[in-house]
Length: 195
Image (cartoon, rainbow, N blue to C red):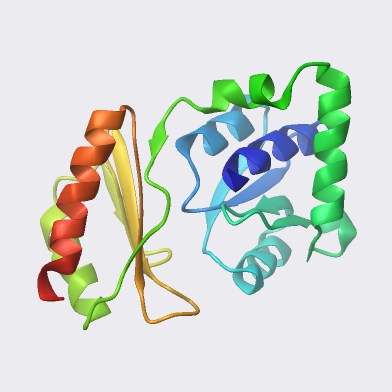
């Protein structure tokens, strides 16, 4: 997944600039933030979309940024999306590690992610309001960076309107597969009530 590549490249970029700020979109696994911080970087969530992440990188001095959708941004390359440069960093990592890519990525697979699940709804603001009313008071943390997000001890979700289609998108991650499946079903029931 693109967020794992973000984590791997961020670790490489931190060798170049220790303590730098690394941006990752809010759909990304908890593993991304953990990997950036374990490598001595500053992990900063951002909204989804190349125009938004590039703007935030410039405004906040982000050194590198990555999205779940496999877009990667390098401040020392004019804050542009550059797949070729991302590939070169991964090739460099493969040469240094001297082991299959599946083994390099395996430690990052510590949580269970739903993937992006789309729903067509009549009233997106209403859906976001219903979810905030239900989960806002019980969440460890909730916020409106892009749509509505809520984090709990062992799972999190983000529901946001698509930037390109008349859809609402759910991303959810949990510490085990059963909880992930349970919470996806619960959230989809809430989201799709008015279809």
